[in-house]
Image (cartoon, rainbow, N blue to C red):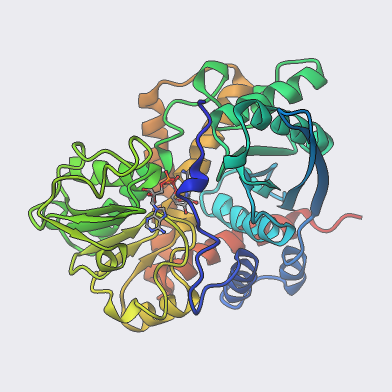
Length: 432
Ligand code: NAD
């Protein structure tokens, strides 16, 4: 079946460490921290603490054997002051209202730091997609789309794939919405297959943006990419695309990993020769490399750059003292816990945050939405060029704050996002 089933590998919110926290706790803490650093009306901050809407729906599903199960689905819409809500739909057993709210807030900051005309949304169904046949996945998706139809739309809220969903899920979602609306509406979701209005380059975009931001950071710190060593945890969509591009651009990618373990070659791996976990499970740890390591050991390698690109909460209070890299670029969402972040800040190890580094995904989703509205598909070259421009613009804006206000990269990215949202809210005012 064409739908990906990343639940097998993505466990970002399920990892438990001594200092991990929920996405909602992280989002609230980040808002408070950013608010303390930006000149913003406290009333605006108060409004941003609350999502605009959280829709909870029942999603009945006729199973293949004729029985019936009823699942619960959610859509959290955090803020739309800058444009329609934007964010993924996940199928995962741990999906909850709070998780969706936290992740929707995260999307608000991510869209704002990229200066995209979107706000933040997130949704999902509390279900284990591994227990769904292809036709059950399709029926669940169509019914979920119908349950949410009143609050979605190209001008209101535009979902995308996330854990446990993929391009085929979005195709069914778009078809269900279009059938009920009476017109083909590709711009209601992004992350579709290109044949029905999806964008070329969408799948590789988060990894590409991680590579672009890593390259810019290397340059910023006065290093040469040809002399830079990189370790990438998670050789999936984000990690493999980032690692291969950095390898193409001259960096020495000395270690990569999948869920089963890591491979290490101090001379640099041929990343185009290593197959990713999603291309063929087990191929990373089974690759013929000079040394195998655990995922924990990869994070502690004496390299210039570590890119955690697998799951959340992997750099924690427990292992941060052993991290020897000079730069961390967050490929995954939330890989660094607050406690680890604090230690890295004290040690002057820069951490380039997820909301900037992996924002290529939502940026190419924005391109897809534009292409659908204009009914004109862009070439892959154009997608790459425009993504490069958007990433460099966002990078430059964040770097300016880092340089001028002596903030960490994370604080600067959140400050930029919050100031853009705050300006929009203050300018529009409160209705009525
Ligand atoms: P993926 O499923 O394609 O790849 C994940 C990789 O991590 C695989 O190699 C897997 O084997 C490995 N892995 C899984 N669990 C692990 C563990 N506990 N320890 C070490 N390795 C483990 O997923 P992806 O799409 O590349 O996403 C990775 C991260 O990036 C997630 O946090 C995701 O939310 C985030 N992200 C993804 C996108 C996207 O559009 N794909 C966009 C932005 C952020």
